[in-house]
Image 1 (cartoon, rainbow, N blue to C red):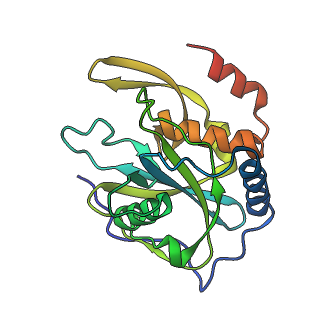
Image 2: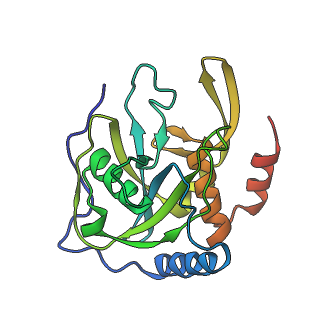
Amino acid sequence: MRHRVEETVYAGDRIPRAMTRLEEIARNLADLKAVIGEPPRSAKGAVAVILRGRSAVDVLVIERSEREGDPWSGQLAFPGGRRSRADRTLLDTVRRETKEEVGLSLSRNARLLGSLPARAPGNRVEWVVVPFVFSLTRAARLAPGPEVARALWAPLDEMPLSLHRAVIELPGGDLEVPAFRVGGMPLWGFSFRVLCDLFDLVGWPGTEGSRRSVLANPR
């Protein structure tokens, strides 16, 4: 099992304030909230789409550790997980899970920008998950826990350039799916759809034609 003990989030005393792109994302999320309202309280879990602003905007992605019996082990995802009985709100859930998985306190080191539409992972329509979007506001360090093999920052607006169809090996057979390429691995499924929702909201950087082709073409 690979386990990276510690990784620098930002080399400096304070992350520069999120520039034009982050403010654009915040405005669009506020507009979305005015249309769809608050996240559903019945949601079973939450994930954190964590952004940081440097010369460009990066998004935090984790690779889950290989765990026997875990269907999502070894895959790319966002920090987050199931709501526990001790969590009063879904924000409590996402803050707790992010702290446990990557050692990052969202309360101290990030600003909540808003949330994307709730989605159900896979075919479990009753298991709704809310993606919350955050931007870093100060220096911090990542310390991945045992459930995380590695944590990496990926340039947000370069992701659409990696859009492709990936073949995923599953116990029931191979599955061909649209995906982004991050750290040499496909980011697909629920996490892929979350990023698609974000790009649909704030714009797909220069790949409209290829996006339609990859998402529509089963081959």
